[in-house]
Amino acid sequence: MSSSNSNRKLPTIKIHLPTSPHHSTSAASSPSPVAGARRKIGVAVDLSEESAYAVRWAVQNYLRPGDAVILLHVSPTNVLYGADWGPLSQAQQSPRTPETQKQLEDDFDAFTASKAADLAKPLKEAGFPFKIHIAKDHDMRERLCLELERLGLSAVIMGSRGCGAEKRGNDGRLGSVTDYCVHHCVCPVVVVRHPDEKDGG
Image (tube, rainbow, N blue to C red; front, side, top):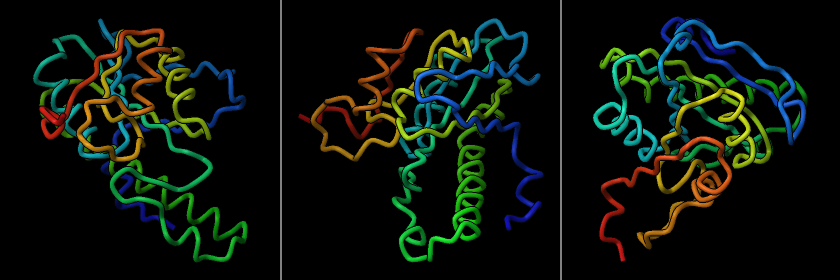
């Protein structure tokens, strides 16, 4: 089981399991870190370097005094996968008993929360209130849009390669998740290009 040592350092994290692939029935109230903010700004993160850059860019270029930030991450339920570390090999090697599957998922959740907390460091240093919101669904794109609507965000900032998208060549195209959000989210979507992507083609 994960040690309680790391839990002490983590900020407020909400893990939301959807009851429906199309609608979220629970309207959970926001904990205090973002309550009463003039604007609630989301940053969609897949725990990659592109996500880390989007958080830094938001602090330097977009956020204003009185804003609060929600770091939103959607974990796919069909495979244990992370943008920087790839599919977890233990998922294929371990025998699939309910106990080992539960342990693997708990470890993965703790690891995801820890990585998301690392991404939040620029927000903490700049003094912006924030919380980390983790949702789980088999459809990352649709769940991201539904969570953004449910949370009532003023805008969302995301990298141009999208959350969980495959690494593409520098062809200037948006990742599939980012492209979906640009066309389907109810709030404005600010797309941030990582410096490595410039002048790619």
